[in-house]
Length: 203
Image 1 (cartoon, rainbow, N blue to C red):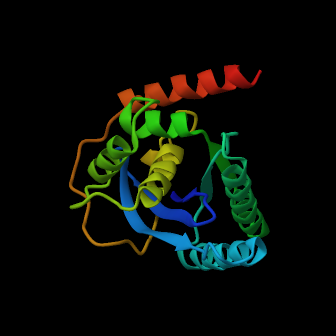
Image 2: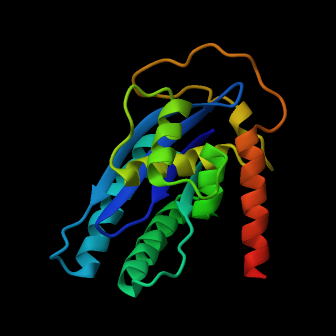
Image 3: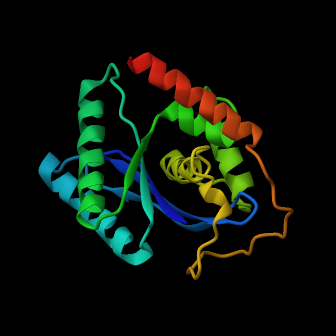
C-alpha cells in the first residue's frame, strides 16, 4: 500500500509518500514541502499548493491520502489557512477516487513514538528510525507528513503495513531484512488508545 501523508499549511505544506512492506516495515518514496508566498492573495497561495499536490498525486499514484485533522487554536487566521489547504488536498484526492483519512496530531504521535504528547524532535527521530534514514527529515512539516503516512499504514483496524506493493519506484536505500511481526506493536497500541480518547472527546 502506498500513502501520501499531508501536513497542511498555507506557507509550508508537508508532503510525504511511504510504502508498506512485509513485517510492518515502511519505506520512504518521496518527501518535500510545498510552499506559497506570504505576500500573495490567499486564492493564489491555495492554487500554488494545489498545483504541487496535483503533481504528487499524478506522479506517485497513492492508494490513500492521510491528512492531519485541523483543530481550533488561538490563531484563527492560521487555522483558517490550514483548513483551506486541507480542503484543497481532499478535493484533489476525491477527484481521482482516492480515499482520504484524517488523523489527529495525538494519534500520529502515538503511532510513531508510542507517546501521544511527543514533541516535534521526537517525531523526527522516530520517523528517521522507522524509515531507516541517514538524517532527520526536515523541516518539521516534512517529518509530520511522513508520520501521517506511517500512522495510516499502522492503523490497527487494517493491518495495512503487512501488504507490500507489487511494483513501486522508491527512493534511495533498500530495506533491511527483518522477521515478520504478528500482533500490534507498542506504538500501535498507543495509537489505538489515542484514537479512542479523541473519539470520546468529540462526543
